[in-house]
Image (cartoon, rainbow, N blue to C red; front, side):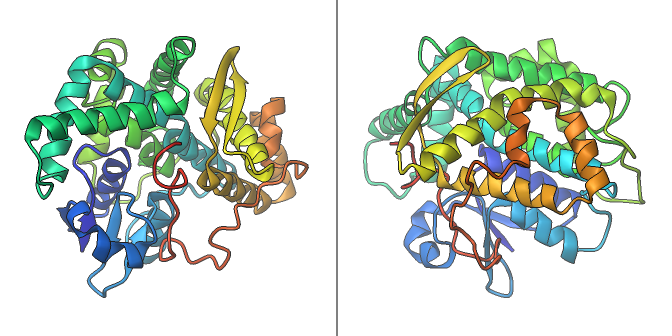
Length: 359
């Protein structure tokens, strides 16, 4: 099995941690020199992608993990209790989609981080590009900062809020990890792997946020290493109920991630390319609309709809906030017109942002 990815990639790290847990061997390669060969199979060059030994192609970490969890032997990363499972999926989506902005900001705004990561990416990805190294370094640093920081709403007015999102995640994870090795029990759940995306390859490795993690939340730093080193073994238990210590994380993700999903979906159905939103009093302007994130909201609604009435009431009690109602109120449309056949992760994927980067 070939994993097309990047050694410092948010989502590649998430998937690698899961493959290591399932003890599934893989060979990692960069996709960019082979992009023309790969694109017809995957629909988008968006890491990570898997080329299986039977010649099938897979993309998108969430459906990849869901597929392997059904097909591979060993314990599941999805909690048995339907309420705990739904909350785990919600935390995964928060880690996947909301913390991305903070992670890219720390990587490409701060000089030490920007210089280091530019060197790594040029050496790893651009060996086939015929240009002087200093030009490639300048090009990739400019592209990444412009596309994923400036064009994703990080300004002088929003920077403190973007950074506070990271500190809040550390604080809330610390609370959940005080009495257990993983977020929702004695064994890793999909919530852990969702948070591993930002916490491993960005916040845990890039100089500026890694120093913050070591000093402010060493228990999270320890959790990163523990999850990376954990392989499936004998059955261990998830919690039977969502722990009280999760309440602040659920409040945070409702006030941030769910607000963004709501405004993004509304703008998408209005045919807009950009939207603005106020999150925890911070005004974000000209954010790129993401069709993929409309699909993320669709998936969360689908998971909620699969709960029985008693479980739905329990989830609502855990999320007693107006902004959480988008998970069960149909008034706001959420129809990305994507993967209608339900083929993911074997479908033709779409970019998170239209052509690959925010416009």
